[in-house]
Length: 114
Image (cartoon, rainbow, N blue to C red):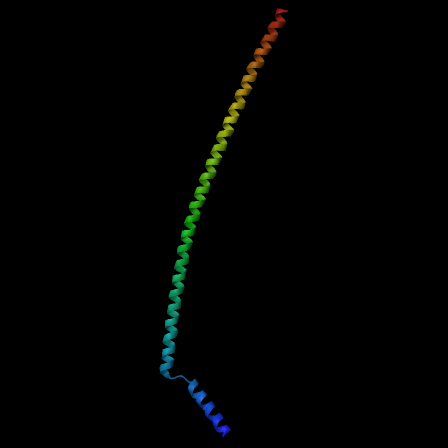
């Protein structure tokens, strides 16, 4: 009796494990459909990534442009200040030279008078 029960269990599991042609066709069709859905999903994800990359790249480019413009403005301001400082130093030097010349002339006149 046990052997008969075991035989029927094995027989039923083997017969249930085999797929009919219709089930095989459905399985192939479902796998094709799943593959196409997966491909479309991957394509959609790749498109989204490309769009995000292009937006990020554009934003980065704008930020870099703004930073470069700000840097150039600071550089121009520093150059202007340096140029102004140089002119002030040159002016002070000329003024001191004039004072020196005037002082030397006075000293020479005082020596000539004495």
